[in-house]
Image (cartoon, rainbow, N blue to C red; front, side, top):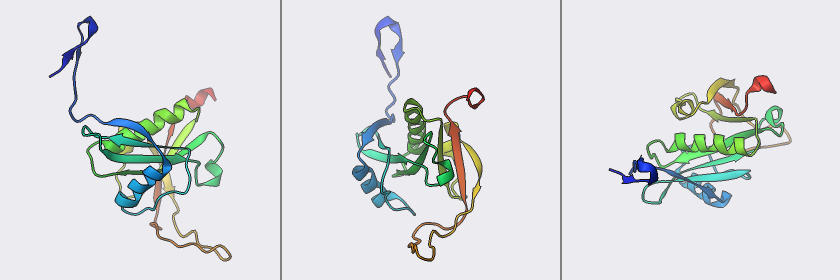
Length: 169
């Protein structure tokens, strides 16, 4: 299956192809609200993207912003705060790969995200991310600063990907 391109090369048409599109935070958060298993929408972002299937239906979203951890918020690190899909095959990998490329084009040096231990990380490994270490987890509730803990409180795995050759920095 395919069509001829100039120069005689054949273009293979993939019927299961996915397309990345820009999204507003409101649209991405609506998707998260409906599909995400354990997180709520996020309050702010740097950018959000969506993934369209062959029928032009949104099958996943990613929302990127400043790192939540203060020690990572150096102005050159971007955090993928949410990815969420409807279960479409490869959508999560496509989203993480697109976030990485966009962050690099925007001038970021590093991109990071977190997963739960029971989430294997195959989508991240597939596009070149590496697990760094386990993060402590726990409550954000403090005396004088009460918080509702509606998110998982256990350990998380921090993943990151350097977008430049760190030996040249």
